[in-house]
Length: 118
Image 1: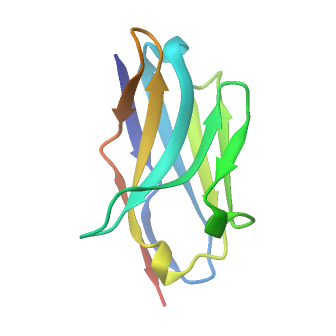
Image 2 (image 1 turned 120 degrees about the vertical axis):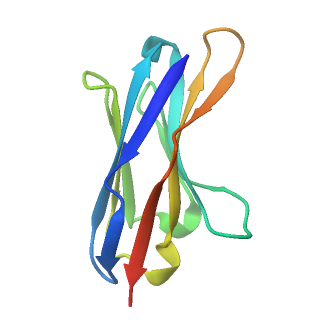
């Protein structure tokens, strides 16, 4: 089992920056990949960025250059740095971990709300 707890969400002005954190606990050694997703009402959850245990990153095309995903393995914490924020960035952001402990299992945090004022 892996537990994920996000933090760092809140209200930010357009053009500002925000850093989200995701603390992982439990069987963290089994985590192969972690990522950030976001969801707005009525829409499907979408990938923002993900990072493998080896440090390879993948970004949503529209977010390249504006967001940075990073992972501190020693602290079992995942980060998402978002800069030059836009009102359309407003969403609930979810942390995801893909565990390979027994087959492949996705774990999700409870989500953190990000609001962007224009």
